[in-house]
Amino acid sequence: MTATRVPGPPGLPLIGSLLDLKRDPLATYLAAHRDHGDVVRIQAGPPGLRAEIWMVFSPEAVQQVLATDAANFRKDNVFYGEIRESFGNGLLTSQDADYLRQRRLVQPLFTRKRVDRYADAIGAETEALVARWAAAPDATVDLAGEMNRFALRTVSRILFGQDVEEAVETVHHAFPVLNGFVRDRAFSPLRLPRRWPLPGHRKALAAERTLYEVCDGIIARRAAQGEGGSDDLLGLLADARGEDGEQLDATELREQVLIFLLAGHETTATSLVFALHLLGKHPEQQALAHREVADLLADGRRPTAADYAELPYLTRVLKEAMRLYPAAPAVGRRAVADTVIAGVPVPAGADVLVAPYVTHRHPGHWEDPERFDPDRFTPEREAARHRYAWFPFGGGPRACIGQHFSMLESVLALAALLRAFEVTAVDTDVPLGQGITLELGGPVRVRLTPRG
Image (cartoon, rainbow, N blue to C red):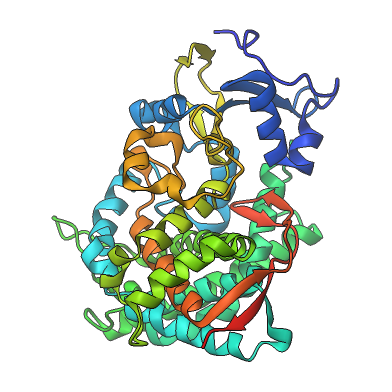
C-alpha cells in the first residue's frame, strides 16, 4: 500500500515539518486540517530518520481508530514507549493480556459509587485552597501552578491517605523533569540510549529513581501492614483480587500508582485552569455558574458527590473548557495492518494521530468553534452530535477509566471556588504547547474578588 496519495504539507526539503512540529505542534495540526482535510500525512525528520504520521481529524475517522477498529491501532509508537520507560507499564500504556488483567483488577475501584466516596478528600483539599487564595498577595493567583498543586494533592490524598505529604513534594519536583524528557525524546528523530551519561539523561534518571523510591517505600510499609491495612486507593489496589485470586505485585502496584498520578493530576489541573480562565474572561457565563452554585449551596455547606448532578450549567462550563483545551491534545496509535481511513490508504506500521484539539474545533461539527459557549453541551445538543466530536477522555475499549473521578473533582472544586470568589482574567492569551499533556507556555493569572 502506498502513502503517496495522501495529502499533506510539503515541509522543508531535508527535514519536512520537523521544525513546525517542535515549535508549535498545535498550530501545525490546525493548519494541516485547514489546508489538507480530514486525513493528512505529515513527514518530519531527515532522510533515513524521517517519521511519517497520518493525522486523523473527523469524528467518524476518530471513531474508527479508537473504537470500531481499535484492535488494528495499538499503543506501539515512540511516545507510549517513552512513557513506559519513565512511568512503567500501567493502564495507560499496557496492552493485550497485561492490559486486560490490570483492567479487571482496577475497574471495580473506579465505579461511580466507589469514586463518589472520594468527595470528602476533594472537599478537604478545596477548602485548603480557598483559605490559601483568601490570603493571596495582591488578590492574584497563577492558575497554572495553583491548579497543578491542588490536583496533585487531591489525587495523592486519595491514593496514599496518611502518606500524602511524603509523596506530594517528590512528585511535584520529579514529574516536570520526566515529562520534559519524554516530550523531547518523543519529538526527536534521533534518540540516544537513556543510560548514556548526558546531563539531561542524568537529571531524568535521578528524578525517576527518587520517584520510584518514594512509591516503593510506601508500598513496602503497606505490605507490612497486611491486607485491610488502609482504605485509600493504594490499599484497595494492594488488596484487589481477580477471580482466580491473582493480584498486583509490588512493581505493578508502583506502575499503576505512577500512571494514576500522571493521568490523575495533570489532566484535571488543565481542565480547572481553563474553566476558571474562560469564566474570568466571560463574566456573564460566570454569573450564571455562580448563581447555580449559590442557590444549591446557600447554607454554606461543603459540596458533596450528590451535588454533582445538581450543577448542570457548571458541568457544561467544564465540558466547553475541555473542548477548547483538551488535556490530551493529541493521541497516537500504530496501525497493525494495511487499512483505509476516510477513503485514504494507511499502511501497516504507520503512526496514526487523532487530535482532540483539532476535532473539537472541526467546523463541520462546531459552529463558530473558537467561541466559548457552555450551552453547546445541553442534553439536546449533545444527543444530536457525533459521539466522537468531543472525546477528551478518549473512547472505545481504551477510554479513560478515571473519567467520572476527573469530572467529579473538577465540578466540586469549581463550585467551592466560585462560591468564594469572583475571578477576573489578568492574562487573556495563554501560549500553548504539547508534551504528555497540554502545556502552558506562561502564567494564567486571575484576580480574586471575595464574595460576601
